[in-house]
Length: 259
Image (cartoon, rainbow, N blue to C red):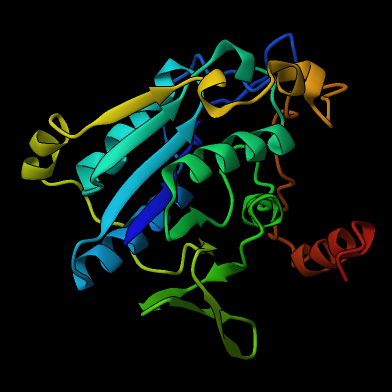
């Protein structure tokens, strides 16, 4: 069985994230594999641990630095990587990205695709559905567990008051949540082994896509304006030396319409 995991290189969420003049996310800052995609890699590796002859391929789309996302997945235990790297990709929105990923997936011919529930930069959470539409494959979203039995994949989806078990025939798309299990940390053996694993680099032309349908010209969405996050303001401090603290607290809640 071949499993493709989608991995995205994103700016470090602990740093200041900004936009460039062309409205795209500034990726010149330190980046890493999206934390939510680590859960997807982990679920794929667990399936590989439990089965025989399972290949896990990490797939990413992005600039040169995006190769670091594949590197991390290989260090965790993925078998190989594919990096779609092309200047025509710059400015592509989620619709165009789904077209690139769908074309790459068709070329890889996997049995199962696993992705995180969202990226930590765009946070749209729609990629599984978009790939399902483009490929004509069923999509099982927001899985807390993933299991494969024969030609069937199933997930457990946890809600606020109940859990559902949903299944579909392979090939299929699955997205997993951050409750699906802690991602493994690369071992020294895994880090050394990753250097010998194959990584292919594909262009838009390799996938048979027209560059005119990608980038800013092909985007269905555009960033009209960006504003920096306003600085934090000092909170209100009430001294309760004379017993007036309770009244001041009630006034604060009432003025802010918190009650």
